[in-house]
Image 1 (cartoon, rainbow over the protein chains, first blue to last red):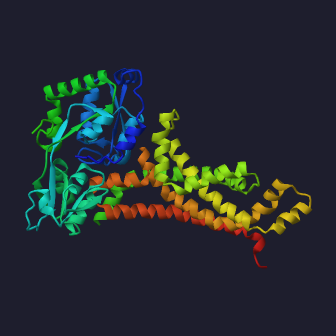
Image 2 (image 1 turned 90 degrees about the vertical axis):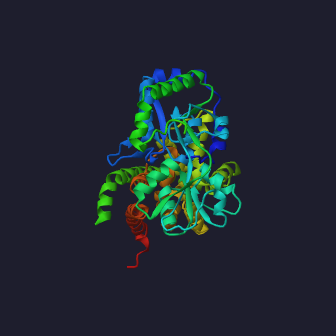
Image 3 (image 1 turned 45 degrees about the vertical axis):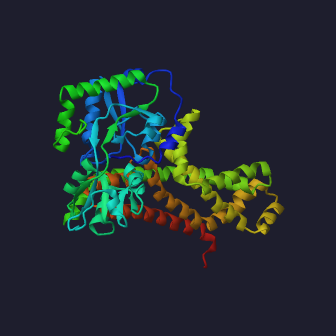
Length: 257
Length: 220
């Protein structure tokens, strides 16, 4: 879903040479796993009224840390700099809907995917045109997240007028007021946006391929990678990962569709 | 009153953010002044090897985006072994940036004091530094205060950029509330009101400074 990654090149440029000790040794010695997330991306990770972090990612982080025998320490970061922070060793992992793609895999190692989704269009309730693919939006205005993979996907289609927004709420209100004709976002995020925004907008067609979200960490940590993937596999096997998914989405999104 | 309810809900988070904003603004103002004064003086000295580096510093800080400066200080410097906590990095970046602007306001003001003041002071037997401190600076500050206040008030709003180095100041905490309530307009307006209130405090401070520095110029 969040595939914004204009900062990736910088992150890669800043990446340090792998340190001698495996990340697993480091976190075991420290006793805590430092997890970065946005904190402004419900229902995946956001702050409750009491200031506590909540959401799918938060629950997954707590679950995995428990399986690794560690405590969790959360760090909130803006999306724009979240990958750079990982490169600069400010935290151990990012659990914040980071999409797995080849460019990112050059800079970081990823866990197995822990959530799957699809790009989906959102349109106004009174929309009469039917957009089945991005190409149908030729000559129309399409709202996307700044630096997101959707932005790149939309810009790759000739003739679509792409508008980039810093935040999803702004996109939705511009869609409702008619400044754009459709918005492109993640299918899981869309369901949530539609429910909470109370605007005259509805879900449109799902367009494009399945997206896989993983947990990135610095390269050169084979033991950590193995331990993390084992924790994920255990969580999937004992049903605890599925339970988190049902709690937040009503369906199991932790398995490939 | 739907939005009163909203503001009551948002208040604890946003006020905590505002606290950080005030902390960063005050610390960076102090840091900026501590940097700005010596830099202004260095640039006025007749020694090229002192004025040139100061000039480069000012040019670099004024000529590059503050966002990039923060990014380099927090995410870039660790790769050469210099590591700061987010708070230190934020205050450092804001201080270095505002210091450059403040030094220019001061340099201009010092330059505006007529050569006659220097000459008169020298003829009374005061040295360079005494002349600067007792004769020129008190007059220059009077000229510089409005321009320096500009920089300091901008600084209050520039603190919002520390959100890129994982600090939840007023702007980021506002975005956090917007993410769950979907009321961007009301909440951004509330944030703007807080920024304005903070600026008003500094404007009041500026007026007092001006009155004080203008004592000698009051018509009787």
